[in-house]
Length: 418
Image (cartoon, rainbow, N blue to C red):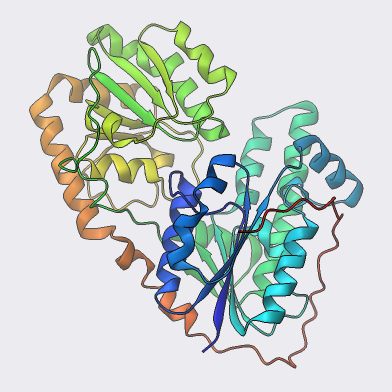
């Protein structure tokens, strides 16, 4: 049995945001089966300082700094007729690292985490290829395009079309395509006609996200409503803006002491500007989100657009907090009625208001939510389907493939190797 090469668009450590949490836990799981070598980008200097945390799970590690600007990626995309999502991650150092890894090690499986990294697959791989799309990026950009106008709408529509073609081509070459929920998997099947599509859902570490664990407690004034997430990610920005501008005023009519706490790194100027509204605090990045979740009277996930299973919802449930989510944010989660789901401003506002008014009911709902997560969302249970795809037969090294390698625009090299 050979080794696994794990390609990731972002170094999966520390596991402190959605994509890194999934990437880390999958890599950790794979390391119990075979030796895993990692090639990944880093876009945060702090991640480079903590890369040693992956040593126990990996053989060789090559971490490449990603410094390409969005403007440069956009120009390359226009001139090369490729999606910006690919040109932004096009890098000669990564290509060289992949070639060296495949030459030096007996690798029988290439695990590709996110479609941006599929451009580094060999033109005719004889290894087993597992493509973790996580969710369908082209559908996300198509949804953005529908709500955007002018040049931005055109660019987003272009991105959606080109990404869909890319996703379809990669799925045809992969032995297995993975998605985080059955809803995403079915959407992919419908839009691409792909087969060999599997569902590997996200889990959660219920020992870490435990209200009785040791972590720093937070004291806040009033009844706090908490949102957590990466605050330069468009769906999160749109979600908190919608909540502040249209939902929170209804809640504060009944509970004038209610405070909305926005917790997460890199808040945009639009997010920071929300503090002009009464009762809104932008906390920003925190070392440990558990303290903020633990003191929350209600955890909310008011996303208008959400792809896949939302870790923020699972984390709120695991911390035994009452959770109110939009229909989009709740999609794919087996909550069994342990969270409240609303599709309109009125429904979400009413759910939050009722939970703020009845603390006993809110506490009982939170306890039921934690039990639901413990019963159904352990990482070991959620990643068990990986055993099936790891057992798929290897490709014949002489097998003919009609797919060609993706043309790329090569940027200057800039590399950091762990």
